[in-house]
Length: 489
Image (cartoon, rainbow, N blue to C red; front, side, top):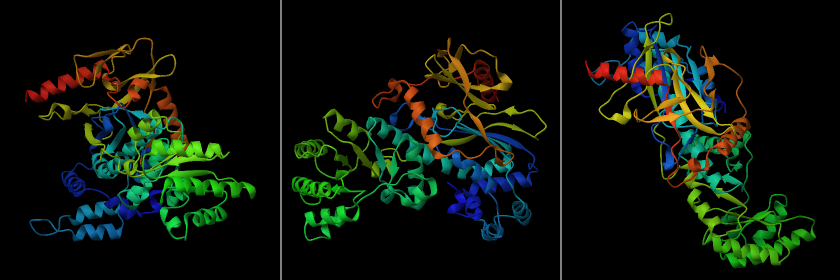
């Protein structure tokens, strides 16, 4: 999607937390305009108590960077902001700096649609510390929610066992932008279509929809409503059965299906949106088969998610497709991914070597990984991933046979017989896109392929197997040394 299809650069630049701007002003006044930083985006725990996440939102990073500018309207607003202690919060010299501001950062990321796991860098940003800081909030806003939605969608699609899933979540999404993000990310995560017409226009996602209960209620009888819809949309006819009584709805739908056959058309499907979906779908299938209408598909909706769909199939429900809305759009039961943006290296200017840094924190799980990190994904002879190694080239020992667990330094993961591939790719160079944007279908295919090769034990919903993520031995040693030095100060 083009960010500028729905925003202007002013919106992009000010789509940030205030402290990003106060820090930028502080860096500017401290003479650190040339100071460089390396920041990593990562999350600490897999969403939904699952075994993986799907990187999403990556395809919009380049446009975000290219459009992050401060125009006169932005400058005027910032000049009007008052400090709590009185007077303007932002000084004239800093606002003049923002007038000429352009991004020159470099960005690497896990390709959109690929697997990503806790603690490893999903995105790495390098450049002026001011530019990197001003990018933080907008970048996290872009990828946190979409990664969460794509992961939720992939779980729903996995439960659907190859049957099409449509995103029905627009009316329950968190606003206008939220609905677009849900449609985009759920399509990458595996959904076949969306009800969101604007998302179809912007992204080229197939759109799907027929009629609601109000259509049936607007006619004297349900049969009248079905006949009218079949006449209006003979090539897109899916009849909603549960406005009054599903069993009467079945009889009326069969009547209309026979009438459509006589007219040279076919009823495509019926939809059930309430009640015992397993029981009603079986009764519907039996009735349509007995009437000589085996081609009519059964679609269901009504607050579906992965566990419900899994249960329906366990009960033998003959369902052909699913419309999933609220629990996909709101990512129930987890409202956020918790992705963070942390500094891992600094230098005074672009001509100097990097100095690795790390955050210790009193909470052990919040301790970060230092250095200029990238990821090697190890795959077995079948192309299945078996572990991800986080590497810093400056400390790389070259050992590719084992790695130290990213959480537990006493645990070693063996990697003999597996081939590594570089996972992260450059998406922005000197503030401009490094390559043409991928079509969404490319990210969607990448997601499908990645999940197809992932161990089913890691994909299962209940107590999934933990996918190994570790540090290259030289990076592990660096992390331990820095921790000891910092704690000793």
